[in-house]
Length: 94
Image (cartoon, rainbow, N blue to C red; front, side):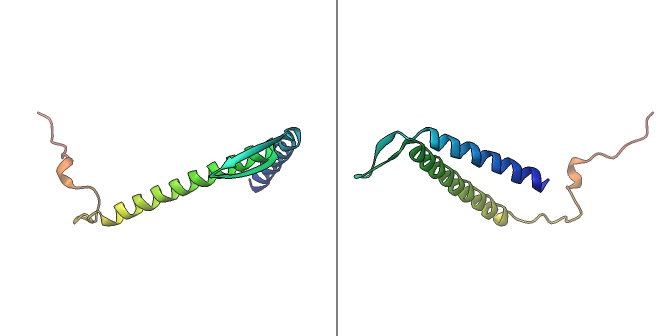
């Protein structure tokens, strides 16, 4: 299974290198008053990585929020399982 994941990762990296090499047109990127000139492929790669970082940060924040919420929930008094109030005993028929 690990070899499949490593192989898939290598194929994706090769495709990414091909994408960057095919998009060598120079573009000027402006960000918060700073300007830089770099290849279009590299600019798109940087934007994709920045987007991935933002998704990872927001996902981490949500996971931490859910963990804190779960810790604050009171522990049920009956540790043996779900409460018996919702269960019905089978009664013999007529």
